[in-house]
Length: 273
Image 1: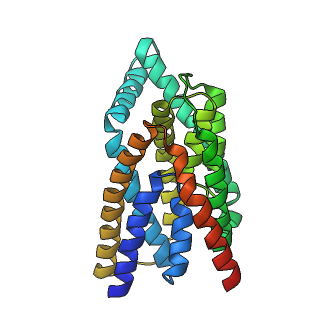
Image 2: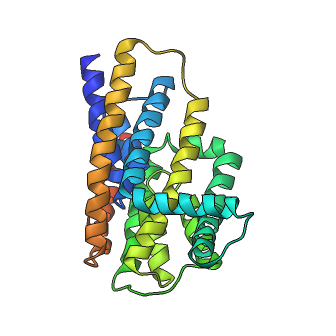
Image 3: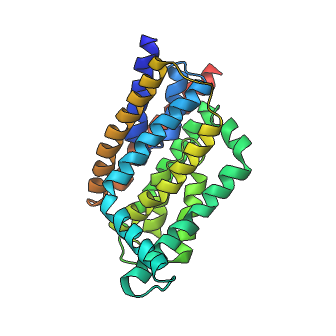
């Protein structure tokens, strides 16, 4: 139990750091799980649920003021009989864009759940997707803009998030790069990407909860709570770090890690069979 607890904490740190950095938390969990000998059992699904809850908490805390403003605007909109004027109208429109951007991932997650789940059993695929993510990140180099996000851009970002359901495809990497290609500045791109992650993570939590195993012992519950707390702490730090990196135009440099690491991993797992 002691060694299993250590493995869970290590993977929780990996989840927290990689959930927001553009290096794919799912890919690292697949690869890390194989290296640490953790199969995808009911207990592992509970673990993934716990660490996803932790990273969800991190993004909610980081964007708490923005989320609070959106919630107030939504309440004012409903309270006024759905009359949207001025700032309230803009905020309701932004909520609508988040809803539209969430549709592609929801459709893929619900209709292709079987193939997607099977993909998480392939460390070679996860490794190859790390390389693909690294190559895509290079397209963000030198990008800067001040475009306003609209329906078309929201849909494109949503499609990028849907692709990122595959292990090894970074959700933040694909969505932020897509947003910057569409002309959004780094701040607007990061905000929309991370707010868009909230319904995506909630959806993942619901799907994983359905697959969860039977009741837990006190020790197992404590290990899951500890994992969630570790994922929250490391996730919050990594989120702040990424926003700082984006502000300095160095987002594409994560490809310097992804491409060689993914290539080595592909070779390693292919040779191991």
